[in-house]
Amino acid sequence: MSEGQQRKIIHIDCDSFFASVEMRDDPSLRGRPVAVGGSPDGRGVVATCSYEARRFGVRSAMPMAQALRLCPELVVVRTRMDKYKEASEAVHSIFRRFTDRIEPLSLDEAFLDVTGSVLFNGSATRIAEAIRRAVREELGLTVSAGVAPNKFLAKIASDWRKPDGLFVLKPDEVDAFVRRLPVEKLFGVGPRTAEKLHRLGLRSCEDLRALDLPTLTERFGVFGQRLFDLARGKDERPRAAPSGPQVPLRRAHL
Ligand SMILES: [Mg+2]
Image 1 (cartoon, rainbow, N blue to C red):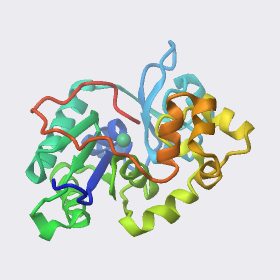
Image 2: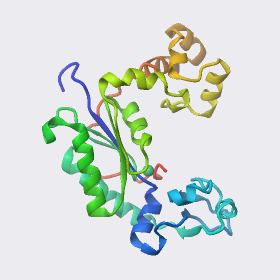
Image 3: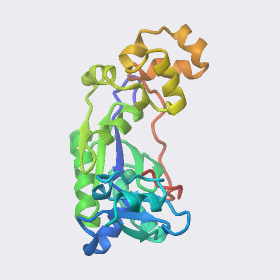
């Protein structure tokens, strides 16, 4: 990558991954509220649930017993991690057809750096579409994709049209997009930092931009610099290194 070249990052995230694998493998589950996870009798929690279940308020990490109270017709499916690992490997092998610059974040999520790619005349949007199509046609799963000039924005973009969506943020659209972003969307801003920002009257990145760097550093320490940059859509973390065949088997991002 030459100095100053515009980066092109794609963030891919499978939609309700565990539940989608179960619904693919058992057609009788399709269109129904499905939750994958532990038993409602013990202290089992929801690992992933279908979008049909989300309409009832069922969420990841919720106790399964509570999920069943919210949605009595919920179909509870026990976690089959081997199946999800297998599906994850298949999804990642599709990624590798398009680039070797892959940074896996979890079983069902990865950053792909396609800066300088010659595929599709270098169109990251068309690469993302091709990946989405291949996963759908070959694996029977849907993924959402975000295309942007850096990782932080690509990750937000993949969530923007979820499920089964694509959202492209062009370099000249970044400023207006980020300006309106709520501070809690920023990488590294958890509930506590969000609350602290809200107490200071800072709700959007536009609000955050009103604070200069010394003020942010004084209030947030080293994270102040990061807030300063993110509020301006800047994220200079390096591009993904070429990855080996192994995908970390951390808990899927749900
Ligand atoms: Mg996902």
